[in-house]
View 1: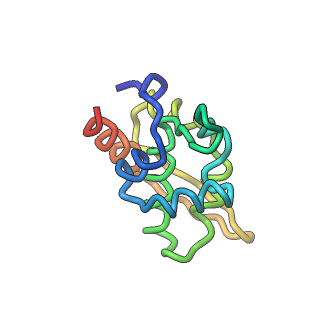
View 2 (view 1 turned 120 degrees about the horizontal axis):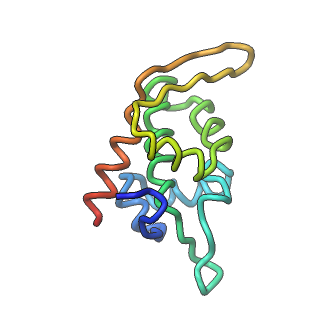
View 3 (view 1 turned 45 degrees about the vertical axis):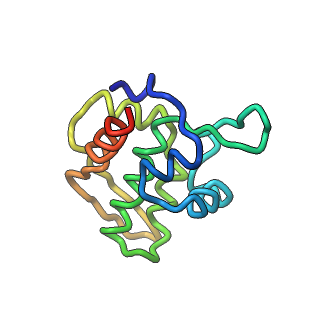
Length: 127
């Protein structure tokens, strides 16, 4: 499945694909952890339609929470800096990802992140 051509997801479908609560997704939209570039508004202007790359974004946030702790702000700060195109390029590359995060003057490198494999599996299960 190509990340760029996968269908859009409603908030409920995104919650199902990621295992998150709909309320958590709503909160992440509100605080900018899911950047505006990852969704559009539905015809009624109240519903959201998320691009498939959002599944990868939320898988990354979850994986980073495993490294930095459940209360860490770092995963959401990283998410705010990504675009769907960043994740589409990583998806097309297919190699395990690594990330370097500098936060409050401390640099941390994490090698072999598995969030893309998780996102692929979840999107394929929905197809």
